[in-house]
Length: 80
Image 1 (cartoon, rainbow, N blue to C red):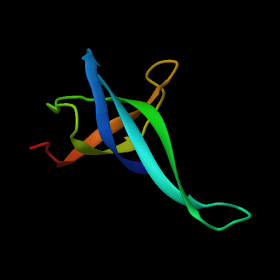
Image 2: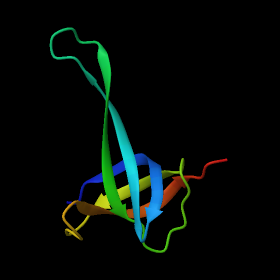
Image 3: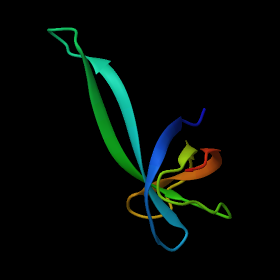
């Protein structure tokens, strides 16, 4: 089963590639306060037209480069 993630587009400057940030909230191991963790991923954009600030969903796919192994499946919310 392929992993799917939701995140916000940070950069669209590369050809056929977008940089997105996935943010999740996890409890601290000792203090149990919710802490925000974020990680950047590169994803293949395909035929989707995106701008910085769009919320997108990506799914895991075969490696398409040394650090690109996700593909944009849909645009969830366009930036206003």
